[in-house]
Amino acid sequence: MQTLLVLGGIMMFLAVALGAFGAHALKDKLTPDRMKNYQTGIQYQIAHGLGLLLLGTVQGDTVNTSQITASGWLLTAGIVLFSGSLYVLSLTGIRKLGAITPLGGLCFLAGWVLFIVAVV
Picture 1 (cartoon, helix red, strand yellow):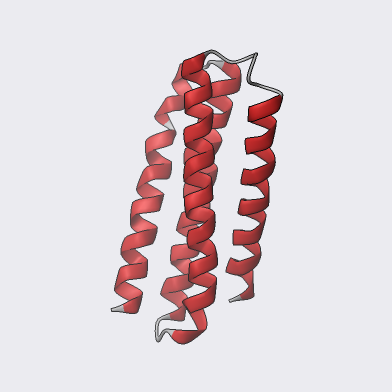
Picture 2: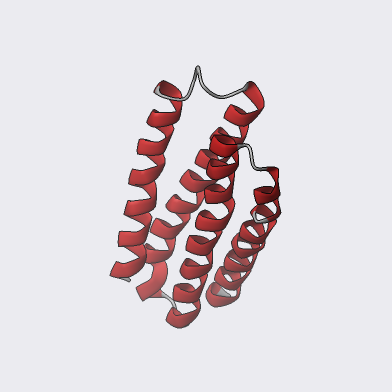
């Protein structure tokens, strides 16, 4: 249980730090499209960081604790792949990195399905 709570806290800390960095240091450096991609990364990181905190909170209360843990690792992988690729794409402009983003989305979807299965 503690691992998911720690991961959630780290992801939320990083989301706030990266969001502030984007709002202040990058606002005049990125094109509007690149800034939109960056902000999308922040938005998904916040949503799934909160998801990790939720999973860590309910983990001890469910029968399928291992499924909740696996769900948390999938959400973490989703944050790294989805949000991470959007951050790098925004900062570098390397469009090929956009191919990684859907893999992160699939991790998010799989993580939430596994969560549903665990609590049902």
